[in-house]
Length: 153
Image (cartoon, rainbow, N blue to C red; front, side):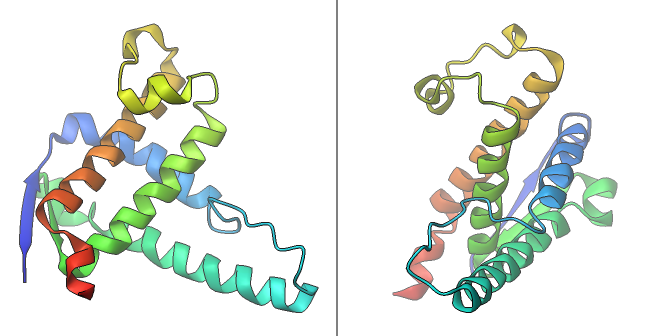
């Protein structure tokens, strides 16, 4: 099984964890990407949303578990083929919520290109943007080194 350990700066990442936890809390009862399900009856829609929320919350727990006691002792997170996909999905959910709640003022093209000058952003927006970049980097790292999709083939 492929496995990587990533050493992170506690001083940089710890403040971002507050943002991640806040977004995870806001995602407990709502989907990061709500679905239009007009063709379904209410019972079926409720069942489907409940199932998606259960999966989203499980992914978020996997992400948050990376930053437990060991992380605060050594500054290391461990990623492998087992937690890679849930972490990618959880990062995507948090990034979508960050975009929706804190980063609306930043143009999509500028955001995805990374050409935003963090110093030009106000304090809370800057912190949300740094968190957005951190999660994007985690996703790229997993895709590049673990390639979770290859486990399905």
